[in-house]
Image 1 (cartoon, rainbow, N blue to C red):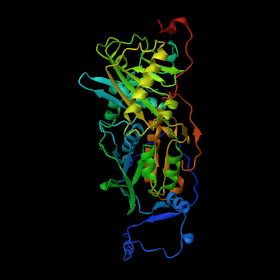
Image 2: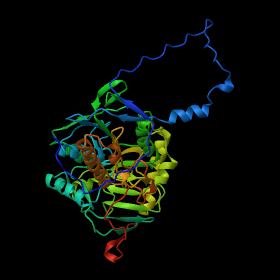
Image 3: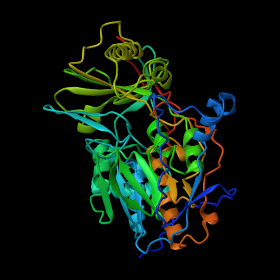
Image 4: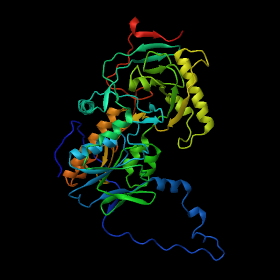
Length: 473
């Protein structure tokens, strides 16, 4: 049974023009027309008309990119189930709050090591070496998200990051940022937070690693598959990831308005360099936003952040590049060329020296390094809506990019879409026009740091003498 839980985020319906529709019914698909036989000499039969009467390449491409709108007319089942593609913060929050409303869901995620998306932590055995290699920390400003974080604090999933954080200018000039808003980190790294969120769930199924490659509407349901392997049928679907994979999935889905909004999203590229040093780098801070260095925008000591300043053993640092450096050195992230990886590693380590004011070649050599490209790292534009939902196709989108570029925005988007879908189910789908949201909103540029936004955090550095540090010797 669906209970009534309502989010403080109010979604206003959007009037849409009547689209060209494909009505999904229970009638079987007609058999395909017979294939034309090849000519006796093995050549293809010539067209009926000359070339000038055929379709041009431009018109063929235009037809290819124009999708017909799926429109479900089958009544919603009494016990609906939602397929959620993407197990980052947005997808997990959506699943959790669907459960609060009495709706079952299945989360599909490509993660081999765990859930989380950009809540990523890499553990290298046998030491072990631990690196947060995507989201570094987060803040909370929205009351609903603050309440969510409070629950995570009580469960021991997260804690406040008390370490020194500031801005580092070229030459080793560091200024501490005021602690105007609590900064949170995963108690054992970011990924364990994501892996633990569903531990008490009873109505959520998780399938990973799983790469959903096709969405098919049939008999009033969405049929999901991975390279021909069926993965179930669902009353509604949620796209909780983005980038070229999401675009490819939606390109022929029968959801032109949803696809159109996803295609308008622009994403930055960021390189992550993980480096482990035998000895401490003799740096007073645990995290710094780097200014004035082309190849580095952020650096953080994972060892002291996660284990405290008295921790013994190797010191594990995460260095993140600027978006400009990521764009200039972008390559296919599935198969990084060795030459590019070495070039980027050398460039980023040189940037670290430059930022710290160290002589060239004087930085301690790391005994372990790993380079990784986040090809679809962070959004640079947004429609500024909590979620997107197409009631005709019973499909929605959630993600941080709809509101901002941070963990909080991802969670709020997932919550908003969960409540919106539950409300739609309760309406029995009789008034679809009242539930269309975000399908035609214009996009605006997003402002923030290269590694994201941090609501409530002030970036005006303290100028008091005791808060400034010269790192150069």
